[in-house]
Amino acid sequence: MKSLFIAALLCVATLGAHAADAPPRAVRNYTAYCVQCHGINRDGNGINSRDMAVKPRDHTDSKGMGDTPDETLFKAIKGGGLAVGKSVLMPKWDGVMSDEEITELVAYLRVVSKTTAK
Amino acid sequence: MKRLITMLAAAGAALLGGPAFAAGGDELLKQQCSACHALGKPADGGVERLLARKGPDLHYAGAKFNKDWLVAWLQNPTPLRPGGAMIANAVKPGAAGAPDEIDAGKLQPHPKLAAADAAAAAEALLALGTGDGLVTAGAFKGEPVSGAMAALLFNKLRGCASCHSGKPGAGGSSGPELYTAGDRLRPDYVVEYIRNPQKFDPHVWMPRLDLNEADLQKLAGYLMTLKQGAAK
Image (cartoon, rainbow over all chains, first blue to last red):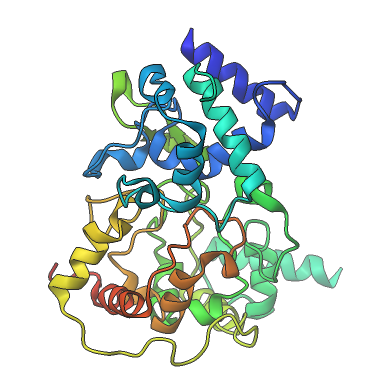
């Protein structure tokens, strides 16, 4: 069911359609920047995760993601892991995404993790 | 008609593995490379262009590559990017919670050039982007670095090895391999690229880490020591 859900989201992105809860630009940015470590299934099993000392966050983990406020997610994406007291292996992405894009990505993470904003 | 003859001659030469591309390096680049590589600075096509392009941009190749490496590689192109031009397009989920894998069926091998064509192509590539101001000569100071300290920066403290392989079989796959970086890349380019990857390739998924100058120099110095066959 989960993979079907993700497949549907990917289809939405591919078709460039506008779904209320999965902004296509956020899905596209997730593909370009996040999939390399967080994985095609968004579960922390990206291709780079094999040899990483700290496993990337599982974005489908409703518990862990539900406990993380939007502000923390935003800071982690913009400023990297160190900005929120986490691993240096999560880099800062402010060089490639605007604040607006990062906010959209945080909203998208709520869709992926089936959690609501805190 | 002339173009047709040129193309036929090129095709004939390719079939015979024979003499150099008749029209010279620039024409060779245009005809054989430009379908996948941007040879001039492209318009900003956003992330979409990165997701769609078939090969990395080459418009700053002259500031980036060492000639000897380029001539040899074009004749025997070993993969530099394990996932091809855009990793996200080539990965598939691993089995039952294992890390994602490269779907080999989605990768296209790079064409091989005959020796004379490789030399002509390299010559033409090295003329690209040398005057665009992306790389400042002398950016790499060449100061002595402690190998152990720099390796620690690369592998742990700055996280480079998460995406790049510093030795065959180890490290990440979403960035190009760096175990031949010392053969392949020019040190000034390495410093400037790490300093601001998006200056070269807007939207690229190599993050700008805002490293301090000392770390930049150490990392570039370390990468210059990574060569094929060198002791690791």
